Every structure is written in C-alpha cells, then in structure tokens.
Length: 313
Image (tube, rainbow, N blue to C red; front, side, top):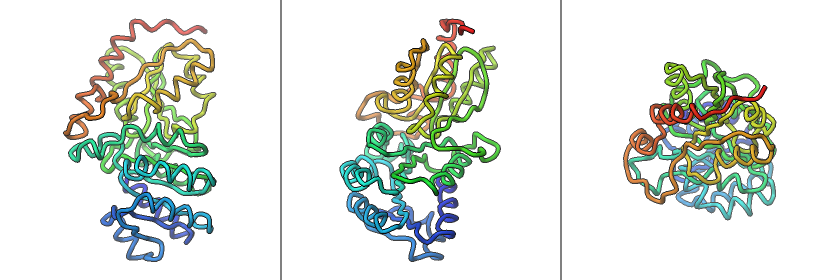
C-alpha cells in the first residue's frame, strides 16, 4: 500500500506544485526518486512531528496541499492537540499519512503499534479517516482526496499487502462501501488490511456451506449510513473486522448506526483487545494470537452462524 500511495502522490505533485510532502525524518528510501526530481516539494522537518503539524497548517493556509508522512502513532497520538487546534479548527486541507497500521511494526514493540488512531482521529470534528483495503483502494482514494476540501488521515499498513480487487474500484467515493462478495444471513465488514482477512474467512466458511457477504469499508469516517442500515436490514449478523482496539473504531461506528436505525441486527466485533501491551512479535503472529487471522475468524463465525435468525423478507 505504501508504494501505491507514493506513486499516487508523485502523480499529484507532478500535476500540481502545491502538493508538498513533509517528512519527520522518515521515508527517505521510498521518496529518494521523488526528492531527486522535485526537491522543492519535499521537506524534512526532522524528528518534530508536533511542529510539523503547525508547519503543515501554515502551508495549507497559504494555498499549499501539504502531506505529512510518518509512522502512525507519531503523526496521530503524539500530535493530537496540534491536529485538533491547528488543522481541524480551521478546516485546513492537510493530509496526514500514517504507515504501520495496527501491529504491522510488530517487531518494534508497543510504542509503534497503532490501535487507537481510528478512534482518536474520528473524534476530531471535520476529520476524514481513510483506511484502504489494498493498493487499488489506495490509488482510488488518492484520486478522491485530490479534490477533498478539509483535513484527512490516511491509514496504511506498510508494504507487501496482497490485493483484494483485480483492478481499481471505479468511482470509489469517500464514504462508500464496496461489496466484494454476496452471501446470506451474515455480513463481514472489514477495513484496512483486514479486508483480505475477511475475504479469506468468507472463503473458508463457503467451503463449510456457510454463505457470508463481504464488504470493504475504506473510509470509516464518513461512512455511508444508509448502506450500513441496508446491510443490517438484510442480514441477521454483521461482523466488523479491524486491526484496532475495541473502542472508537469501525465496530463502534457500525454499532452506533445500527442502534440509531432501530433495525434488529446483532453486531459482532473482531478486533485487538483493550490491552496496553500486546507483547512483541511479527504481525501475523500477533494477529493469530488474538483471533484476527482468517482461520480464527471463520471458526468463530461458524460457531455463531447456527444462532443467526432468519432475515425477515
């Protein structure tokens, strides 16, 4: 996904010199080519993410389209006050790009995990939160963000994530849901790199004769409330899947919509636990340990599938 973002940003910057990338002393290798070709559109502000937010806000006020790039917790949690005051209060078009979503940086330990960023960023007024499911969704969302008016946060895993789609989804709008697989009674809604896990779980369940719908939610905020309500009205159970803590993420957003719609639909959560220290290990190891691999998801859904009530016509 990181490479897809870099290539999409390079195209934006080539077409419009107002696009400037700010680095807090990270991402040199992936931006080497861009720095060489457009040195005036790349600024390294040093290890000073909070100052970089103010810097980006000032540039946006002068008509630039700044993009702050860094590792998730250091450009979100560390800068929350600056993002709220400097950017959101003035509704400035600054794009914050965080790499290392969830436990992607598993070997680096808990300081590098990002399990609260969707909740924190979603709580900020006017902030758009983007969590694409694969490189194709990254490309499509970057096309949408080019004309977006206001602050946005793009959450990326890192690199090497498998594709979910065979081609770039057409006309993917901010807020839209993407139907990947159509099934019955149970719907899985994934966001970010967990969409691939959701699809893998669906395939395993299909082999067991359990038909499950699968959706990608590439923009947790805003999200199409009517689409979520429609899914709730046609399925007995919605299962949300995200590499995030249990509070403030996709599950909280979907649960709120279903509760406010008055539709009777059970919402099941697949997420990381509410623990400050999940230990150290590879991303796949930590996901499997906490039931976020396709096998574990499929097994748990298979157990609850027998409790799913028929959907009223």
